[in-house]
Amino acid sequence: MILMMSISIMITMISNLMMMLSIILSKKSFMDREKSSPFECGFDPKSSARIPFSLHFFLITLIFLIFDVEIALIFPIIKLFKLVNFLIWMKISFFFIIILLIGLYHEWNQNMLNWTN
Image (cartoon, rainbow, N blue to C red; front, side, top):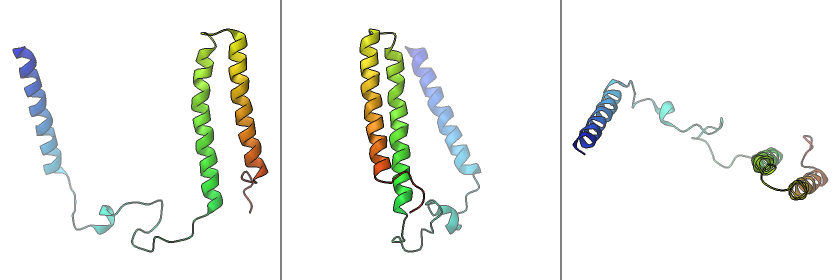
């Protein structure tokens, strides 16, 4: 018990010492206004926030995020193959793929996949 307490005290002291050294040795300049401003995807944060944004670019980003989540949902289906009967696995996989294809058809039907406007 005493050994654990002394180790935790030493770890706390070392971490505090490291933080203090990094604060003292850092070369921050508080006068540099550009470094302290947030970076907002290439937009100038000191200009008007109401600039036009491409809706098509936003829709392509949403499609990418949706497909990214779908890929993350496919991995458990692959692991499920060893745990359940093949017929049950086929039904689950088929149902999931049908949902993905319906979503893809809807995006295609709404012309979300075309880069030209």
